[in-house]
Image (tube, rainbow, N blue to C red):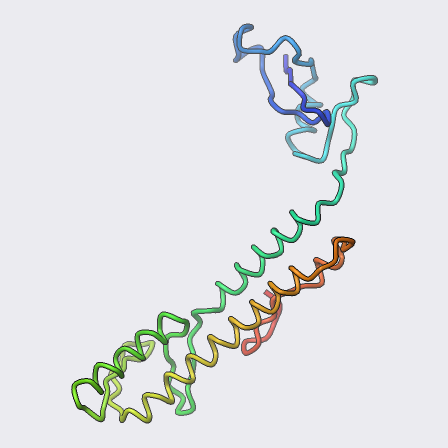
Length: 190
């Protein structure tokens, strides 16, 4: 036999099976439920509650929580940004480089080390690890290509975070759903 305890909204807080749990492990306030009712709760977690009067499972639609919806959307935007931030970047010469902030930092560091050593050339490695010897001016063009793409995506993410924060207290799920991360350079909703 299945039993459950309920929270203040009559949502299940714990389930018990008399075939598994000892009587001492099952709280006295636990309510008896059928196997079918248990499956209904488990298959629809958070969307079903217990009607104490009728002793039946009923649909439960929690009140819209704007703060929670905003946090979920922020996490979606962060995840979408993360999926594109390190994508490869092809420069004006058709060479493909690793993308992202770390790549920009590594390329800048390599250029700075070459300049500190008094060299006017620097060695870069593309996405396929092929060696490229180039003048520092050409190296700057590569760095800018990778940095501009990263910055474009990062700026888009930040704009969306600001849009989420700016939603009025009366905003609903539809307004939250209208905020989507669209990659500026790679096009398409993520």
